[in-house]
Image (cartoon, rainbow, N blue to C red; front, side):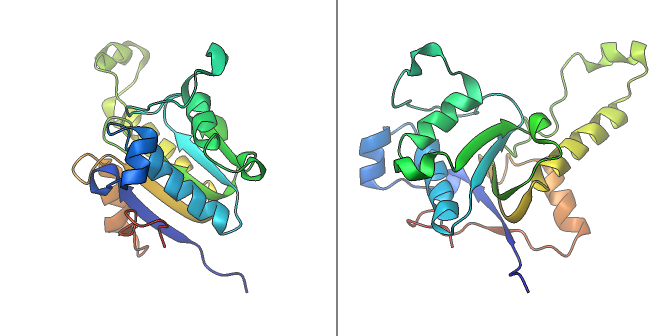
Length: 196
């Protein structure tokens, strides 16, 4: 029988980079070392990993290791940045995608990069103009809920749901906690070298 997988939440606000990580990535870039720890944990477990985001960008300050000559932008630029700190043999095992583009696909390990209120739900401030086309706020919110569901169900074994802080995480995560027996615990060891 295959071992059961696991789900964890992690918050950047609870992460403290080591001195070596701060020296390598800069004091204002906490996202790179935090995501690297999560990715390395998956790779060390023998699984490939995909990083998923709502938008084609990451929501944090990142001190990119190199310019990439402008050929790569957005989420793929962040993926290249993360891969640049990995051994060459592991780089091909790490991918990134928007949630929309990853519908119908699956990976053993998934890191959802932006499970924040500003992304799920992502409701445009001018949504009321869409009422002309029959849109209602309830229908828009339901679509947003479904999109997060897609993100959370792309993993076949391990899932990390990353947000800025407990206060800023998506309200949909509390709905999940209230309606399922699935225990979503904090990645309390994000401050160690691995997140067991």
